Image 1: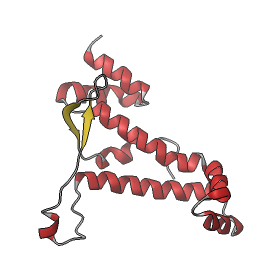
Image 2: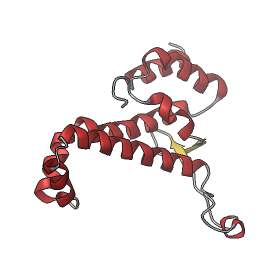
Image 3: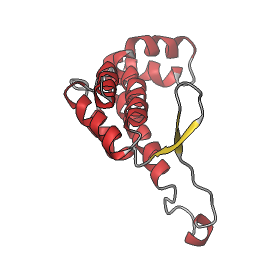
Image 4: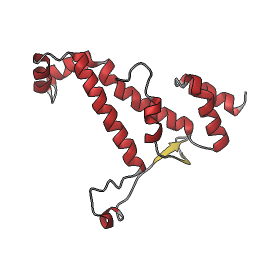
Amino acid sequence: MTEIDRLTALFSALGADADARDWAESEAEEGLPQLARYRLLRTVWQDVDAWGTAARKWVDAYRADGAAADAVDRALAAGLTPEDLGALAREVARETAFGVLYALADPADGSLPADVEAQLPGWRLAELNAAAGAPTGRHLDALHEDFAELEPKGIAP
């Protein structure tokens, strides 16, 4: 089994389907941390989607004991369904996730004077070796660029 075949199998296991081989080739041939990138973005999408797919569950939980219990009750009383609230919550989660991923790439958002922003630290996500948990030296950059592309099919609003 070649490295590309091994990586293709891993991407397929993560749900990359028809794009699995392309992701694998990019990692193997370009030395990019594509498996770590895909895994992170998949995880973010699972969290985003849960707001829509598990709407009934979280609506019930919020109504029982949630910070927004009153708002959820008012929305339901106004005629919104748990599915409506789920669609809204998923969209807010999607926008928030994109914003965080974008900020990882460019933390200077213009909200502070340029001379202050120039002195502030940035951040980055580092890939870790699966076996040892040690940094590989590769970083996940510009994650926001692939975020929309990896939105699960059939779930987008």
